Length: 181
Image 1 (cartoon, rainbow, N blue to C red):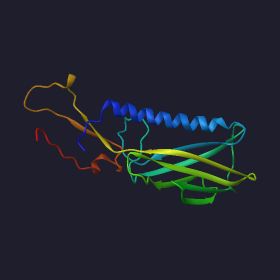
Image 2 (image 1 turned 60 degrees about the horizontal axis):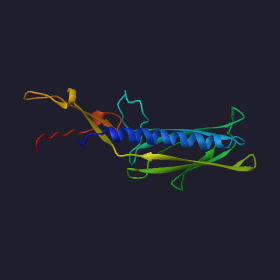
Image 3 (image 1 turned 180 degrees about the vertical axis):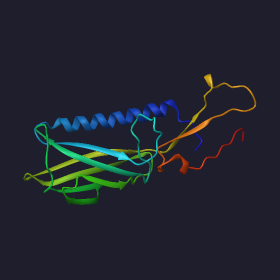
Image 4 (image 1 turned 45 degrees about the vertical axis):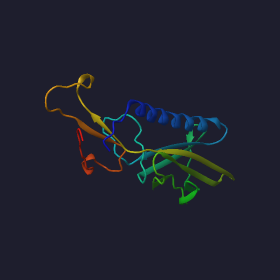
């Protein structure tokens, strides 16, 4: 994939991440009277170490999710609660006190996967919370350290920087370059 990762795409990805974060926070704090879900997820896909944004999963990328339940400013003990985890409506895990789940993203990119956490017997009631995880296509940024993109001479150096590939290291990727056909 020797496409240029445009500034517009970077802005879109960052705006999408911010939107999902704000949406999750607004819905979590909207129910101040009851317990609040505090959910975090991490995609195990590659991004450079200096990348400051959220690392998004691609299709089939492993994702680790965990949550805490907060009530009255305190974390609740869920040791005796059966917790059900659903991905796009399908049960992927359930166990007593299980506040972490790992799974592979299902949808092809670009798309979203919907993760739902249910506690059907929490203090005699039913608690449920759903988050949406964006699934993105991997991208490669071509870095050319030339002001204004101009250079002179017969040779030049550029670098390929991969983002969101389903690998642990960029050394696990194959690179192929073509210039002028």
